[in-house]
Length: 151
Image (tube, rainbow, N blue to C red; front, top):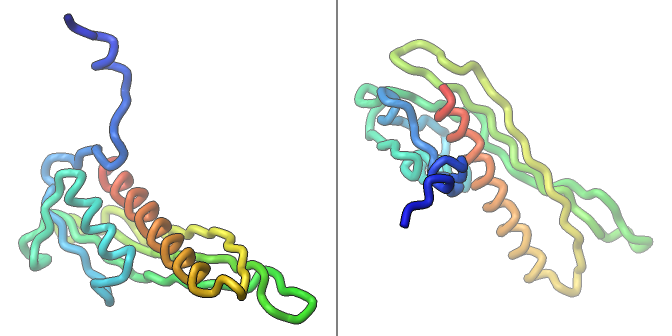
C-alpha cells in the first residue's frame, strides 16, 4: 500500500536539511573552538550533510565566527537586594566566505531567555542556566545552518 500524500507534505526532521552542492566542505574559523556555539555549529553542519576540513584551503566555504559571547544580566532584585530574575543571553556574529569572496556579510544573532533565581536552590539554578545556554547555542547553530542551506 502506498501513501503518495505523505511524500509531498513538506515535513522534515529538525536539522535534516541539506547543503547545496559545491558547499559541502566547511572550515570554521573561531577564536575559541570549544564554546557551546562553535561545537553545536560543527555538529549542525555535519547533520546537514557537510564535511569539516582541517584547513581553509581544503574547504568550499569558510564560516568566520567574529563574536561568540554569552552571559547574564540581573532583571530584578528582592527587597534584600538579592537577584530574583536573570536574563541569559547568547550573541554570535558570523560571516561566510566562498572561494575567497564574501557571500554573507557580518550577521548578528542574539537569543535571550529569562531565568528565575532562588538562592536556596543555588546548584539547581546554576545547572539550569548551563542547560539554557547550551540550548540557545544549539538553536543559534541551527539558524546559521539553515542560512547556509539557503545560499
